[in-house]
Image (cartoon, rainbow, N blue to C red):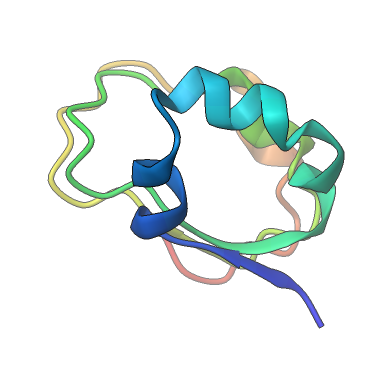
Amino acid sequence: AGIRCGTDAVKRAKDFNAWVDQNKTALSHITELDLSMKNLSSLPLFLGKMSQLKELDLGGNQLTFIPKDIDQLCHLQRL
């Protein structure tokens, strides 16, 4: 079973980077990530390390940069 990481988990952290720092070891086990409506202009670099990610919600962001290692997400089924 994978780990879901939704908006509520990220909201509880003081900021997104703090949340990532606290959860680095779990990143490779997360299967669903909701980053919708976060005012992102680029994807976080750590996404390439989320090897089990199957669903990624980026709706409502104005993305202008996508890191090269996004192609490492071989399990991604829904974007």
